[in-house]
Image (cartoon, rainbow, N blue to C red; front, side):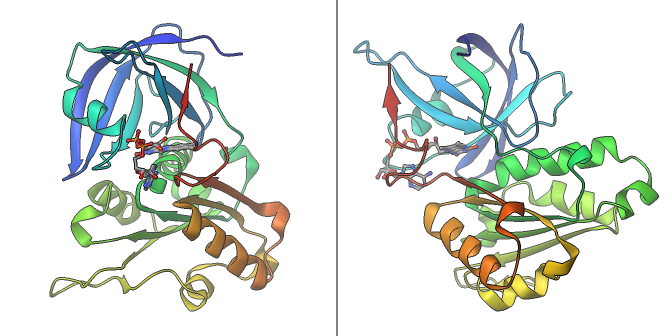
Length: 255
Ligand SMILES: Cc1cc2nc3c(=O)[nH]c(=O)nc-3n(C[C@H](O)[C@H](O)[C@H](O)COP(=O)(O)OP(=O)(O)OC[C@H]3O[C@@H](n4cnc5c(N)ncnc54)[C@H](O)[C@@H]3O)c2cc1C
């Protein structure tokens, strides 16, 4: 079992109105693989110890660990973290955990599908790919595509960084879709991810893309089912559910 370690906040980035990234110093951190998560444990005033899982946003090898957390209005833990954590504050975490992992050595093509904060572990994979594949020929040999669903344009997490990565890398294609009414000038896709969108973004099944899907449970279930129906090999599909209802690992827990 992984031991609990003390993490110190060394920086915070306000990503969107409801999302913050916390940069952490974790002495003794053993390193992680792109896609893994940590458990975070708080000590509440009443002595309660609520625990939640958060994916690691930083690439393996980064000297600092980054967690990107969406503040859920009625949440018990995420508002506390987002509202009250400042540089110098400390909390406990353990990890790295989980088998939702991709390494450059696993090969590609790499197809990533995210909903909302489900982008976090996929961002770690894209950061890892960019850090390791430093020349264009290597990136061409391992192309990546991301289909990312957000409610509104201003809720797209890591938007500027995704644009920067894609601008410097012609073998990375990023497709955004938003599910609410767009502001004038929106150039991405519209509406929830559907089969047509998946068929347009994905490589043909014969190319055997490695597929990673992460986000709320209904989105994950839908996308996984549709990609299988399109003929993708189930053995190449990995999923991670963030949703609240009875999902593996998502059930809030306490020590
Ligand atoms: C492996 C894993 C990795 C995760 N990584 C991240 C991450 O990188 N960033 C991140 O922001 N979250 C992530 N989550 C979700 C996170 O663990 C918490 O579930 C979330 O922060 C809500 O906790 P809370 O205490 O604020 O809300 P709770 O008090 O647990 O719930 C409050 C209300 O929100 C609903 N709810 C709970 N979770 C969600 C959710 N994810 N989406 C929508 N509604 C929800 C509940 O049903 C309830 O009505 C991850 C979950 C898992 C299982």
